[in-house]
Length: 394
Image (cartoon, rainbow, N blue to C red; front, side):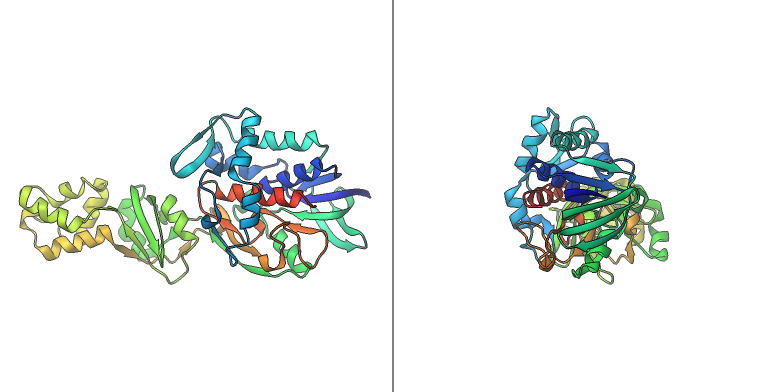
């Protein structure tokens, strides 16, 4: 049995940040992961270039049963703090739309940076190591591992959520929280494509692969303006992934495929000025032609020229574009979800330290906690911020 000051379970973004920060305080740190490589979600993110943070990150872009919980961590370790670390390592980066920051080269650079941060302060990393049992000891915890036993004063759970199980994601962190008496907020897939029932899928089959950019997609009082993609299962694309975190079964979403355009008035003008053109030709100025063709056929407006169509028909077509209402039946689930919504209930955690209120020495950081960000680097920033905060006291 080996004794440590801190054992971190999970060598992802939050776990590695926490381990490095605890090590900087002179703590003896062990970080373990059942995977054979660290930071696998970092590696695959952003198309392999890692959308490592967002310049616009603030508490407003995060969902939680307690929206105020994330304020402390995000304000104490900001996106600008992480960017300074990236630049200190000479990692070239660029900004894409909406404040999203990516590596110019490879996501591997972020992983290597975090590994270097840990090595510099003597953190011990054990990969391919499973945790089989955790027990409370008089002066901390006893952690049974597949390759030995470790004792520690502080235990940090950074095991992530259930998203992308093919990469080894499990509900281990939630089980551990419940074992120690912490409450959970119901978990569900988030930032995930939405699916349709069979009949609707059959009708929309010709549109698989068609992208619309921009669209505005709304659900309840929430709206996102980004790209949308028709798939053979339903809808995907950034706007759909964003709204999936807010959508619930039984709700419909409203899609505006020509945001900022009063299509009815535009079609009426086309009836006067382009009377001899087919409606699908006019619509193709705003939409991909396959989508335009589908809409005119669905709305019974395929015959004749635009000059021959009544206000009633034009309005029907305009509504199908500006306010298409559709009710998904589900999502693609954790298999393709980028993150997990819900998790360890923040009522049982200290927002300034990420420590469990009633279990001294126990911490939860990153995705396992009931804090979920928007698409676009926000969830990585939560990992960096929450991991950093826990590393200051663990």
